[in-house]
Image 1 (cartoon, rainbow over the protein chains, first blue to last red):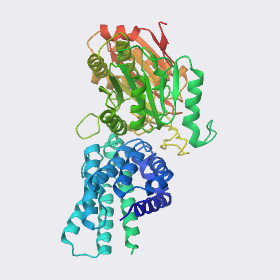
Image 2 (cartoon, rainbow over the protein chains, first blue to last red):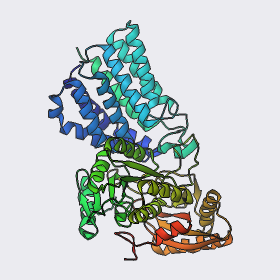
Image 3 (cartoon, one colour):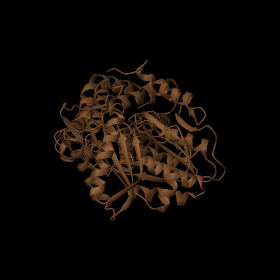
Image 4 (cartoon, each protein chain N blue to C red):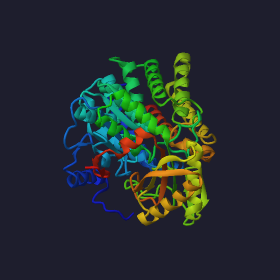
Length: 211
Length: 330
């Protein structure tokens, strides 16, 4: 995987956000404060503004630059969390290339670990971690087993992301602004989890149609 | 949405520009990254106070930049915490060699952004976390109590101490102390509309109120039918007193804060209700503040903040202050 593919994925994610903006916004207004989509859009716009510059970097440096750009443009909780994802991935990748599943899985799990440390949330807190941790664990497991085709594996990751997102529906939040609602947050999917599911779905869908 | 806007994307910048132009004797606006500093740098060796948070709570925090309070404020996007580069640039601009005291409202986003700024800064810094909102149960199962209207009291007291030459550790200790002595709770009658969203943050019927609302229009403890001012006030004040447990005849600062859409006339009526309720509880109001200080755009509603006073807090509350939103003694 090259820097060019990272940038193409970001374009795809931006398109997916536009298509799903009102759905995520509704979730965020139900249990958050309704600004998640606005903030994510601002972050993606900031990345695409420096697209040419990013294109000249190797994948690790590009990921780090994307993280720093998100950190200074998104704000809120999503800023440091999504920035940590990219900075964690950049650190794990170093100057390597993302040319096999094992490297990508290792990189992804390092990103998720950094998000976990920054947000101090875990599975069951009704956050983005309910999607990221299970997907990261399954990804590492599947590349280790190495008995599935690329597309079979991507499909399993998409399913896992969907399951994680849905699991946030019937629990109360213990982190973030939704936690102030107590039991009133039950029955609503967490917008951060939905956001991550959408991103993972979009990345997997894009990669399925490559090569 | 009916608001004074030219273009939605320019709301924050144009508002900051106007703020800077109208108070050029007190403060200076810096853009990209956005932060507000005093017009004149404070004296060598003084601890520098920096606060910040989402915009839409004006005059918090920019309105408290100036002599006796903050050295800098970092305004984020509306209801969105500022980003670490803002805090770092602000700290580099106002550092006097006495260290940086960050004053942060306890929200996950603010906490994480200030935490990253603190780690990346490279100048000695400590943080006072404000969590005065008693509407939120403080337990290991929540993010914890939110920082709301009591924040400006922490900024006033710590700011005065810094001006008087207190060390970074002393300012931090005093800030933490004021936070412990302060409790707040609010109620909203209407929602507010974030310009970029274009529609109200939450739906609320014309005869309903949200008890324990947060300052971003996020829901609070419960939804109820509206009641008389005295009944609402009793609910708020009793919850606050349960938390603060003041001694008989304790002296307090009573702060009635409007959320932006409630007229001053009603805020004073609320003060009257709160004064009656405190009197019945044998609590003595010896300092007071009424007005729109920690707002939520155009939300109708108000919060009550009570701060238990001791000699030190009184001394620093009464000391001279010269900011856009608070000015006395000079």
